[in-house]
Amino acid sequence: MIKNILLEKWSRNQMGHFFILRGPKAPLSQWANDLIEQILVMDLGISPAVTKEYLERGHPDILEIKKEKEKYSWSKTQNDFTEFFRFLQYHPIGLKRKLVLLHDANCLTQDICNKILRTLEEVSSTTIFFLNPSETPMLATIESRAITIRPITKVVKEEISLKKVQEFSPWIETYLEEDFLSPKVKKQLINFMSHQEDASTLLESLKGDKPLQNNLFELLLAWESNHYSSFAHKKRFLEETLRFKESQIYNNPYKERFFGLLTLCSQNNP
Image (cartoon, rainbow, N blue to C red; front, side, top):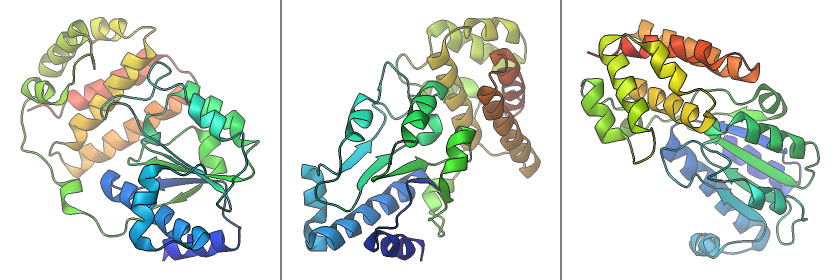
C-alpha cells in the first residue's frame, strides 16, 4: 500500500524530498531497493527482469551510501560524504528526480547530520531516503523535515530472534571487529559490565574521542538487542536511549549520557 502511494506520487512528480524509513534492517533495505527498481521500470520503460543488472552497472541519478564496515559508526574518517554532496549539485538526466538511499542513518554522527541538514534546504530535484533500522531518533531538525514511514508490516522471524543468554565477556569477543574499541577501553568495559565498578575510568577513556563514543553506543545497542530481558527492562533501555540521543542534540556532557546507559546495560549481564 505505502509503496503504491509513493509510486503514484512519483509518476505525478510529486514525491517528497526526505523520507525516514524505519524497520528491520534487511527487509527495509530490500523494500527500498524494490521501490527503486519499480521507479526504473516506470521512468525508463525497461522490464523488471533487467532492473537489477541495470542498478549493478549504476545509474547517474541514483546514489546508494553504505558504511564501509557493518559494525562501525559513520565518521569523517570513514566517509566524508564528498560523493553525496557532489551528487546533489547536478540535475537528474534520466529520471524525474535524483534518488539517494542512505543506509544506517541511525549511526550518523551529529557533525555529518549538520552538514547534511545545510544541504537539505537547497535540495529541489532530489529525494533522500534515510534508512533507520532502529528506534534511535535522528537529529531533531532532520526528523522535523522528513516524512517517517514504517513500510515493513510483516515481521521477519530472524530479525527478532534472540540469542541465548551469555555473559558479556565472551559475547564481546564474538561481536567486536579489530579496532572497534581500543584494548584498554575493551578491558575497562568488560570490568564494568562484570562488576559494576570503576565507571569513571572507562568514561575518562572516552574523552574527546567521538568515533570511539559512537562505537561504544552501537555496541551497547547490539548487546541489549541480542539478549533476553523483561519488557520493563527493554522499555527503560529505550527511554534511556532516547535521552542519550536527545542529550547529544543539546551537547550535554558525554559522561552524563553514557553513565545511565552503561548502568542499565550492566543489569542485563547474567
